[in-house]
Image (cartoon, rainbow, N blue to C red):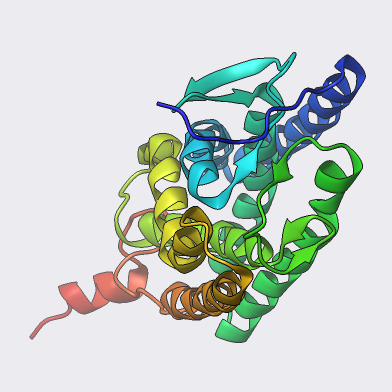
Length: 272
C-alpha cells in the first residue's frame, strides 16, 4: 500500500543533531517526571512519560491525509506503518513534548483551576508550538508539509497544526486528570496511560482536524482548504473550552488518591 509523496534524505549530521537534541529533552522530561513521582510518591508521572512512545504510532496515519513526510533516505527508522518509515527522533518528539507539559498541566488541574486559566495554558501552548516547530521544519527539514493544498503556512507549517496540536496536549492532560480523579482507584492503575495515550491523542486530533484532513487529503484547492483549516482551529478552541469545563468541575466524592474525602465520609456515617 503506497501513496505518492516526495522522497528526500537526511544527512548524518542533521539526523545526529535531531537524535541528540531531542534525546536530551526527553531525558529532561524523564528527570522532571522522576522528581515529581518521588516528591508525591506516585508513579503516574512516569506512566505519562512512557505513554509518549506509543503515541508516535498515530503519526504515519495522519501524515497520509495531511501530507506530512519525514526524510526516508538514510533514515534511522524506529518503525514503519502504511509504507511510511518513521525516524527515531519522531518518538523522542512525542516523549519530550508530552512528558513535560502534560504532567505539569495535570498538577495544575489537581487544584481545580479556572476555565480562564486552562484557556491561558492552551494559548501559551499554541504560541510555543508556533515558536518551536519552524526550527525543525524550516531550519533542518526534519519533517515537511508538502503539496499545493497546504493552507496558510507560517514558516513552512500550516497554522492549524499549532491550534490542534496544542489542543491535544491540553486535552490529554484534562482526560488523564479526570481519569485519576473519578475512575482510577489506585495510583498503579495509571499504567493505562501508556497504551491509552495513543487512543486519546488520535481521537482528539481527529475530532478537531477532520475538516482540514478531508480538504488536504482530497487535494482540494486553497479556496477550500483555507476556510476548513480555520474551522479546525475553531473546533480546537471549542474543544479546549469544553474540556476546561470538565477539568474545573469539582468531584466531592473522591480526592485524587481514590479515597473518600472526610466531608463525604462524615455525611455517610452521620445518623439519620
